[in-house]
Amino acid sequence: GQNIDQPTEMTATEGAIVQINCTYQTSGFNGLFWYQQHAGEAPTFLSYNVLDGLEEKGRFSSFLSRSKGYSYLLLKELQMKDSASYLCAVRDQKGYQKVTFGIGTKLQVIP
Amino acid sequence: GAVVSQHPSWVICKSGTSVKIECRSLDFQATTMFWYRQFPKQSLMLMATSNEGSKATYEQGVEKDKFLINHASLTLSTLTVTSAHPEDSSFYICSAIGTSGKTDTQYFGPGTRLTVL
Image (cartoon, rainbow over all chains, first blue to last red; front, side):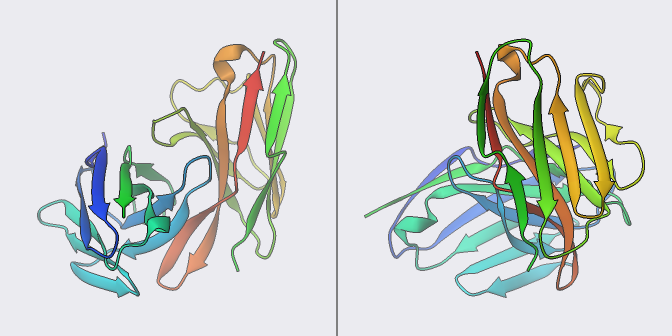
């Protein structure tokens, strides 16, 4: 089976940096995704990692360690609009598109 | 690119009626689409995988006769909730596979909020 863990809630200050962790236990591994979801809206794609290391994309970076079953999403220079849920999702089979989503981390950015 | 639309964005219906939700990939062809359901403060739960020209693959616990999926073309999949009941009230989201640089990834429609009275 699949097991994906994330903190349920986090609070951070505008302008600061926040790290959202995700650990996973899956029968296989073929990539990890991060999505952002604002309340009442559909998720939007943020990042993808399949090899170990850090992927940087503007204010957002995502890190993966396959041996540890661990990933984090790093948000820099936080803005109020970054208040949202951040979903970690794992694809466990090569050549198969289905992913399993974590419950999501609700981030609140405060002034 | 990789825009997915859903219609309607919200619907209210009486118990016992059927509701059809459309999911379209607007600027790309999608051989595979997914249907999810999300209850408040919960994560996305995959209901079924929709494959163009073939039968959908349903997840365990999802009634295929209640949630009818048709993927008639490379840009359109429909989900019909038959004989809807209040417990079917939820946020239904579709996604379609598109390419984002290194890999295929899921791009989501805006979701349909279903309320069954």
